[in-house]
Image (tube, rainbow, N blue to C red; front, side, top):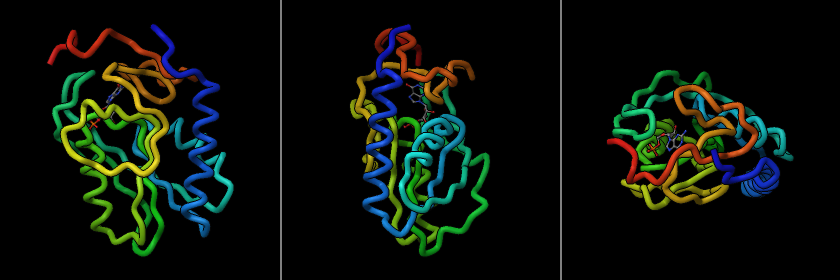
Length: 175
Ligand code: 5GP
């Protein structure tokens, strides 16, 4: 396993993202984390947020193999809060094909927030299948399967404080 982004690099970037989000939402922000992968990012982001902030959680599942998504998304857990008229930021661990985020943005936009923006820790632009707007990106990475800082492989490695590459280039992956 090779460390791609160190814990120190992540902490520094997440703090900067929290300030950027606060600057764009001086009156406060409602953060919506996508479980399970975003729980570590959310926790650091929320604690670094200078202003008012409230939280809620959604869970979705993207079908596919453990390292490749098929693009079908299912809502497993809905929000407990209403979004109408609120400043909402979706907090995602990683945007790969963009299909999960595209689905999230579509269903949340239909709930009439005042603003709907998206923060993701990692983005793999070369893998995009749909053109989704991301307002705050932690790091752009190449097409490698990564784990740690909330991201898993078969439910393991979420506890690593850094981002690591688990396997070789995507060409060698099945599916
Ligand atoms: P999408 O392809 O819809 O943008 O991403 C779907 C989901 O696949 C992400 O939310 C994430 O859970 C998972 N995923 C995509 N790339 C990776 C990766 O490199 N590592 C891990 N652990 N999960 C990933």
